[in-house]
Image (cartoon, rainbow, N blue to C red):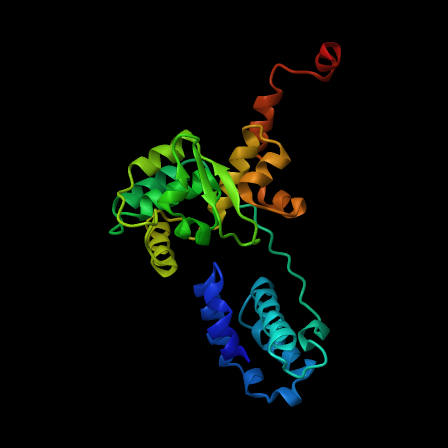
Length: 274
């Protein structure tokens, strides 16, 4: 069942490479040796408990969600005779790993310096463009030149994690980055997800930022837009979030930015001007 999902469903996804690796690891687990007729929630729970000794709750949650989807597709589309989705019966380990990591003072300069020594010429513009657009890694790598409109200063993102395409605005810095990228083929950043991951890890190590993740750049970008005064609706249009509660998890406004907005203003003054 997992192998069929891997062959038929995974390739169509934006995060196909990440999902493929996750499923290949799952195939090595004892739970995949069980015949479907004997599949119950007990071996799923045992898998959860075994993984809890090696990985964080967030990883387990993603793996169980993927397995839940595998079984769901099998039941609804492949006529696999399973009366219930046993993953739904398994208790989930609470996930409390919300991150608020942003670039701190001087860290962007350290990243820029480390990027100068990168052997991958696409790495620097890709990272800087991510900071200016809040694009997810898959969206960034799938971006095509045909989706860029320099006249309207926008980029069309047809394939997204949520399944809803969106058009994002491009800042002056984003435009400047694009103008420095050579057009090698249809994609703006023609490299694999693995090449980006390995390149990022090397740059992060050279910059001595071991706790900084590539996805943190999305937090940074969304927070910057919020600090520029964009509304929640405007932020969601850029980030692609459908759930405003999730958007709030990505928005980490610096208190100093709020202080600058409040400088010279008072509640009494605002009321008098209304």
